[in-house]
Image (cartoon, rainbow, N blue to C red):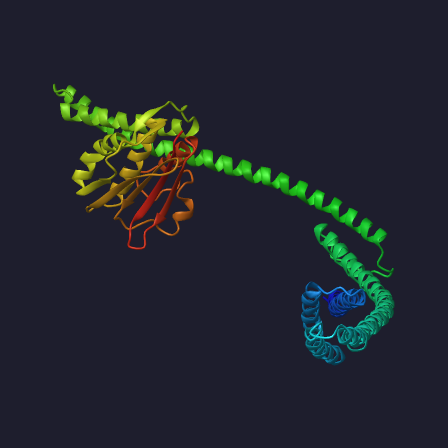
Length: 472
């Protein structure tokens, strides 16, 4: 800022001077042009009038009687001369010519009314009247305009000379200002380079783990700055290499932790069903020793627990090895009905109602029916689990361009603030019997389709999941 402010002020002043000079020159040029245009128009009008008077005089000397057309033209020239007369002298001469023309017309109208000798005398008087009372003032008008044009031209040349000297002075001032500004910039740049060298060497020492004082005795030069930057670059490359190595170690640790978490989840999900199966089989063996057999109800429980283990293993397989998409044309309205039908029994047991809002028109998209249904079932089960004492879930299907949007809204307590950032991370769950993989797999399915899955808490309570499904 210390360098920029004086430079900006100098440049602003010079720019303002140039603008003022240009505006002044333009105004002066415009005024002189207008004056010249007025004087030229006045001179042209006086020349036309003089030529017309000379023509009339010549015709009268040749005893031509019919000069009415020239009289009409003379009247027009007088009217034009009165319009362009803007100086007091010009107005006076214009009025004088108009009065003389009126007197001439009275004399002309009395010609050839009597004795031919008298008419000849009147004709000669008319000629002398035109020469003395009209042609002479007209020439005076023309000469006056010529002097005005000459004065305007001289003024124009004088103004151009003054502007030339002004521009030369401004150029000299600009050169001097440029020298001072350049000197100031050089000094400031040298100091900035020196300070930058100090900072670079300080950072270089800190990156190397050194805690030494930085002393710069030489003047700030670009060559020294280049060497310092090269040293800093080498030090940064070394630090980045170390960081990359540590990052790989941290990533390896995270992977091992994830494997451990995964193993713990698998053990937890399979141990509980195996425990139930083991206890039922042991009870059956004891009954068999007593002569009994395993009851049908226990067999039903064993089958249910085995299916539970299969479902858990399938979820792990889906997470580690996602299936390929099998796209087909699917009506999303019927897909919503299928998904709600699969969870309707559990929803009825927990007194949760499911409402579907959609249009009457078919909404067909090219998607994998089974995977999209898996996403819907997962979201519906989450909404039901979030309302153990009853509530409602709303499914709203909207047509968008060029696909569809499905909004799943529940009336539960919503998502805890500490869980919101980790909703789509593996093994992130607050359920007692959950793996935390359902939402992760659901989002991956939507992304494989080219869509998205997002979640937010509603201001009035409850969670809202938004699915964006493209057309293909």
